Length: 86
Ligand SMILES: [Zn+2]
Image 1 (cartoon, helix red, strand yellow):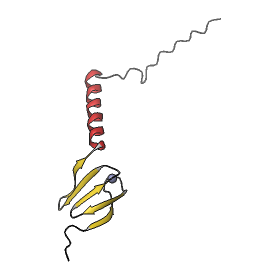
Image 2 (cartoon, helix red, strand yellow):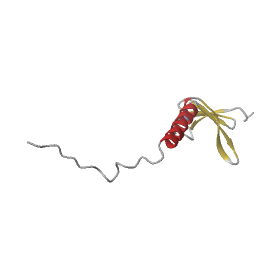
Image 3 (cartoon, rainbow, N blue to C red):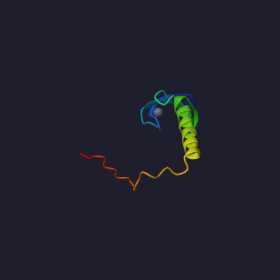
Image 4 (spheres, protein in one colour):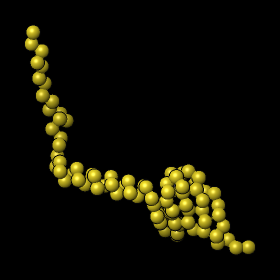
């Protein structure tokens, strides 16, 4: 009996959807990702869409932060202009 490459149905550590565990790796179709398990915990071995999306989001956020230092003017000081003359 070999217990090295046995496939098991488990829950994805990321999205909790059904995933397949094989050895110390968990492959999730929903995340399009493969996680590896070790004594230190779960690690992401490879990801598809999620990783790209995350990178794009991070890049976008960094761009916005760089372009707009502090766009916080409309937060409290709303100019009350009533052009309702009759
Ligand atoms: Zn998942």
